[in-house]
Image 1 (spheres, one colour):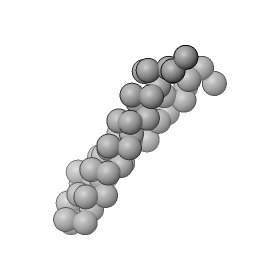
Image 2: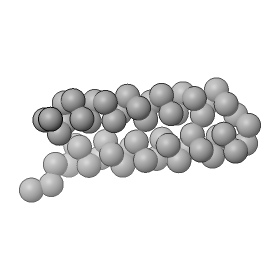
Image 3: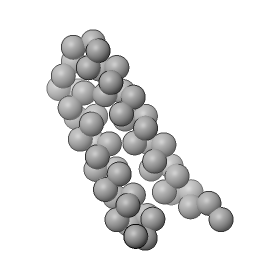
Image 4: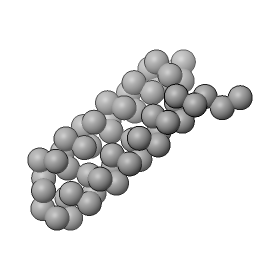
Length: 53
């Protein structure tokens, strides 16, 4: 069975990384940094609470 919350969190992390890369290419470093930090926190929460590992 697919763990939907964990899958959604992984998808959100990918979107946040993509946004961060786009923001960096435009020279917007503060939003890019916030996006990368948010993606890291989403990955932490996913691995700690949603996957059960």
